[in-house]
Length: 257
Image (cartoon, rainbow, N blue to C red; front, side, top):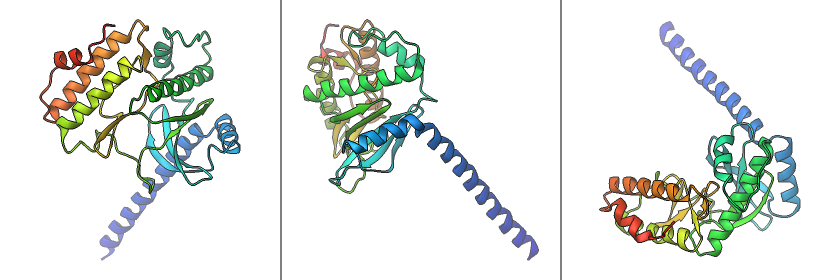
């Protein structure tokens, strides 16, 4: 009997320890996201009626967290907050330089992130105006970007294709290629990191997200990035049973970079 009690006590102790560690990790993440300037930025956006309440995480990444926001009109928005402490500044610098829209000479990490967020906002605006299926951008300030919430009326976010593959992969892939062609031809941008992690399955319609690294066609690295995007998509959708090839997709996109 005593040994059973001891085992039960040990199990409870392990659960408590896990909870303590998780609580500590949550506090650490919270402090990395909500530093003083970020809190001031969110407060300013709230005063401008872009946001009323933050209500839980949509996704968590190394560089940014996406939170679900609610406006005073009870509409959902997605609030993307870039984390100053853990962002990959070398990667950001690589994608920002060569873009004629940005003349970034500073090595200040915070200023580079602000430019990165502004770049994502401008890319989304450009793509949305071109008719590409992306979230509509609403506003950006410092390291905070507020965009259209993609999900249902109850606040459930649309899942990435990686987590919820389409019911008809062939049909979904064909729709995705239409969006990819619009992205390049009409938006005149190359995504640069396109995969099923950043393509949402919105009621069996593809919606492209995470366009911060996307580059203009004039950028010297645009052709290399387009080739990489196509190779990734072909590999992923072949695994989902789609009969396709790199040559076929590249010919369809058919843009002489």
